[in-house]
Amino acid sequence: MDSNPSNRVIVVGAGPVGLCLSLALAQADVQVCLIEALGEDNFLEQVPRAGTNHPATLELLERIGLYDKLEPRGIIAPLVHYWDRRENRLIAEFDHGLLKDDTRFPYVLQCERIKIVEEALRLAKAHPNIEVRLSTAFTGFTQGSDGVTAWATNEAGESESISGAYLVSAEGARSIVRKDLDIEFEGFTYPDRTLNIEVAYDFRRHGYTERNYISDPDEWSNLFHWKGPPDRWRIHFPVESDAQEAALTRPDAMQARLQRFLPTGKAFDIVGSNLYVVHQRVAKKFRAGRAILAGDCAHVNSPIGAMGMNSGIHDAFNLAEKLTKILRREVGISNTLAWSPDRRRFYFGDSLANVIWAYDYDAATGAISNEAPFFQDFDRGVPDGSTVDAEGFLWNCRYYGGCVVRVAPDGKIDRVIEMPVRNITTCTFGGSDRKTLYITTASADAAPGDRLAGGLYAIQCEVAGQAEKPFRVFRGGSAPSRS
Image (cartoon, helix red, strand yellow):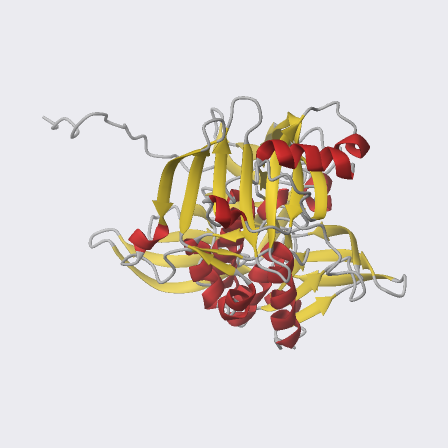
């Protein structure tokens, strides 16, 4: 594996999101370090959870070679039923088969999360671009303009650092990364809880299909089929917020609830149960600098409808595509557009690449030529907004760098102005003599305790800014003609 951290993405969490992201990045020749707290001895000892994989998700899983591993372990389910429980009446049937001309997968695949991560982990371990770190507890991270450093405790109990270009949290709803970044997880938790009972019984003999949503004003339920051995059906029931888990999950209590749902007169073979709460939350933002949130650490919702895991997997592929383009320098973050006093040269910055480019400009023809790096690899943050003074020197604000740097027309540093905050965004000259440099800063991504972040600052300079030409913005049509 290439040990160059500038081409490495650190992924925290080996769930469906983290594993799919790692495989998609590795397929694009991006190096990945995948950190997971669970080890070989307990990775598969996870509570049964989501497992309905939508057609669009199956298309993504096929890209990374995962679908063919999962199909034999799942159930192809083209139908979904909606029932009226009181009347024991089928209300509606939806058939994914109608999508046969739109997708190679006109069905959902009922294949549980634990099977998905088991097969995906095998693929990840076998991929030369992925370093899988099981039994490794992620503890925190630091980031700068050029990369991130993750801190973790390995299987031997030793603390170590891992460097990379970006860090992606796929840790789930209790994300350490999101909490360290102090990103608000907006939303609420439903007061009621959901009881899941797993039964070894074939409900198809009563007219049900593999996926069923059952309406009832008093006790709605859902019924889903999963492949064994033995084949199991999960039945969901709403339960009161103050009910005790021990009372709800007593065998006799669960049998009574199941008999009310479907009176068979015989005890059901209960093979498992669990109780969970349902949240509806979304992070206020999904990225802070080089740290990114994906899946449940970014958004959580009711698992009914299977939008939780499916949306997280879509996050993974969407993010893999964008990170690949960024690491290949196919895209950047545009900042700085400033002109020399004679208007024959302009400057353009790319924050991701940490470079400011210079271009020659022919005002008569509009032609742009002679692209060349003007100022690059300065180790104080990345370039943000700029202005050019009357002497032709560029003043560039350094995001993450806590300073403004004045650069001579030959690209050499003239001076560095230290600022009391970290994230400096843009600057311009003003005042009656144009010798006051106004500097803006950002409160977003501010360092902890950086209470001055977001303020507007003014500095008196001995050099003046350029006299800018005024312009007018016309709304609702073309500009009026001059007479």
